[in-house]
Image (cartoon, rainbow, N blue to C red; front, side):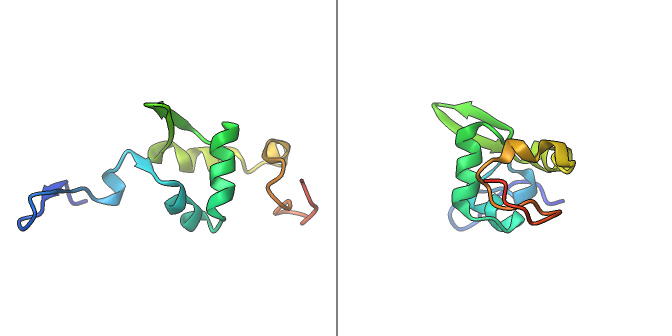
Length: 94
């Protein structure tokens, strides 16, 4: 893993993705194959593990995969109301 370092031309810090504490909503949407609006809705509903900094919700990168693992049983799909279809039976859960 590469540590954070300064760009020799601009002097700005370059932080590798895996070292960043938070993942953006568009990054998470692309990673999971969802629409960014779905991720945004989950943040607003308080479904994803986030932290409030200066009135904005940020998604913690270190907790997001653990959160996804916790959601894999069918009993928790009801928490994701309005998100589409059940991945197991394709039945609508809206």
